[in-house]
Length: 156
Image (cartoon, rainbow, N blue to C red):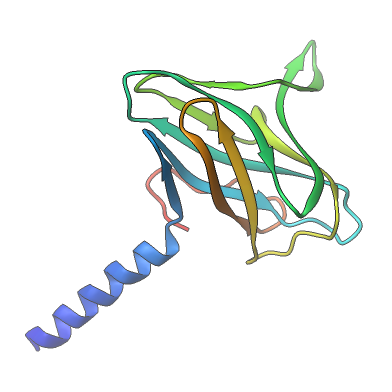
């Protein structure tokens, strides 16, 4: 019985590690990159994630790139006087010992001119370039259309 419990615990740990998709570059930990599934003819999609800076110095997200879109831009979405406004930003600060959060309704990475629809369950490549930490390639999980993402503490 004990051997069975140990095996079960080992399998659970392995599964949780496989399901979580966190990445690290330098002092930066990138957690849970995700996007929403799109209809086949959609031309845009948004990518969301968080970047935790474990270091004593700030860093800056300079750009994003993905082969699934012609362009990937850093964007900010906000509501001004009841009207949704979206604009490109040149970079995003990652504060020292702080967090940069890209989430629906705020900062995000906009994938422009998608080359194909994003299908639920897929993982798409995304390259992030930081001023100090350098370049990291991550896999972005495609969630269901209308998904609100992952709740804090929840794993993919």
